[in-house]
Length: 278
Image (tube, rainbow, N blue to C red; front, side, top):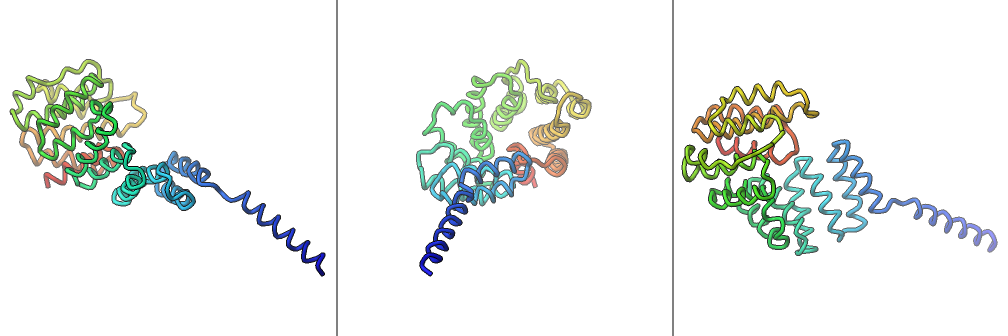
């Protein structure tokens, strides 16, 4: 009887050892989450990160990863909670503030987004010139001088970004008017994205809105065929708002948000601008 009891215990021990060796680790779930995200299944990716967090609840990188996937799934409030928890665990991790600042903006908490961006830049001041998100938040906070300065700083980081020149224009136009903003428009040498050259010339007063749409519709070389049309309608909306045509602005912003939905940051910019106009 004792012999059989010892044998049973031995078999049970071996079974438990095998089960333990087969149990997934936190990093196994993180790898699976990355694969799900690659397939654009961000909700599944977030759920898999949740499994990793259960196993390693104080690992900041897991929280940040799940927060990013939640944000891309449109669950910004949940993402903000993960980023806040990451900040509690490591208050000196600048990425946590940057990521929370982005979702604060998407939640319409503009002042809070600026506060988070400022904390991030205090921890990592080398990122200040490239932080265009902060400039956009300053615009919506009515801090037009700060926004203008932010985009001027970005110009030193990347001198070929039409969007940067347009946002500086929008900030200056609020203070000094359209004519002055056009006169002081940042010079852009070579932004190859369609239809950015036409967007630039539109804001400079050299082209008509239809020229921007035609360029977006007629492009042949862009892999993502919808991206040019999204950006065309976004910047047409911003242009019409800048010149005081609210009806036309809403028309284009509605198309940008309703017909070309994406998890990209600028889609939320279009949505927030549209909602403010409404």
